[in-house]
Image (cartoon, rainbow, N blue to C red):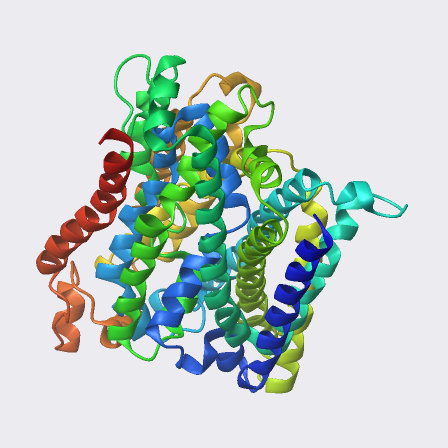
Length: 545
């Protein structure tokens, strides 16, 4: 990093802070403004913010490591979530917006009633806001540390107590905390828009330089095949020598997308949908997010990962390939721009996770169970929670080493309740006990699979254990416990009016469903073909033509 690089980085950080503070006045009035932007965020800004949130600094490092270990087909580990994200866009986006909730956990006490609903809301709020959220933010910070080490920043620091990498991260973290705590969601989505564009420019620049070094895509493909690494080019794992075990691939396709705790969109994406102006804009935001998230952003990272197999063979930590290629080939100024793009990816995700986690702590715990309704007290609590979550995640990140391993751990411990979260929209018989038992069973079984006794299980087999083990628990629990009270079901159905198995409730309320499931099912299949077909089709064109 030269002086000009640091000037570029400083200009970016100053611009991000300024933009966040400019919109601060829009998020300081009450919790609706602070956490869902007063429900006035336009669909294109919500979509870009959703894409920026899922595009963290860890993502290109994770993809490079995944390509090195499992080839292109290893990306099915995250590509498969397109099935649930398209389901969100087609089936659920309008329902979430129609529910008019501040957080997705607020739906718990709209859909269920009594003490079980309160216990479920409180337990999920704490688990998702603190341990799960801090782990998620922390592995992004781990990736940022790896970039900092690759750039040699630590080598030039004056002597400071403790871990030198912590001191490098702190100014960035402080800037994020300032505009997130000051502006709420408006500060997050406004900076996300710029950050997504900058992050994509950085990814394309690194891919361009890496491909130029290896002589272009066709030369890269020929070189990999001549070196006996042709299986790394597989778009789908086939054959006994595939780099992704078939059991794992089938686990991705057949289980992971519907069993994961974010199968219904999850808190971060639902927060953006709840912030849009109406149902139509929520749907448009979700569809646009899918195009940006899968079709647009996949291949620059994958190409860098493939090029690294040739340029940096046998790299001890394949996740370091991306930042090492940056340092090796980018000229002064451009290196600073790409580093700024990675900061952008990092900051957009941290700001989102912090704001979303704070929404659970304040809306679903503090306001709900302490019965606080004073706007000034709630906004103050939101800001305190934002600072606390950021510092907790920063501390936790220094106990992590492998981005991909943490990503898979988060998937596994969240596996199990996904099917319940989907079915609660379409079947009146789902109750709070079913969701609570599914969550606890999935978490417990996931932790059990990490015991030495089960060390030989593939990731797909672990998905099988957690998904169907949880299913074996929550289905009998549901039928052994009472249905939700009729008044609760009627209230939910009257507000949301979903399709599916709601006949007794529809008969009582005299209302019919607004959304035919058969029509939406056909639309879901069509959009899956567009999103995954577009993603895989681009890869086939690049690598096979």
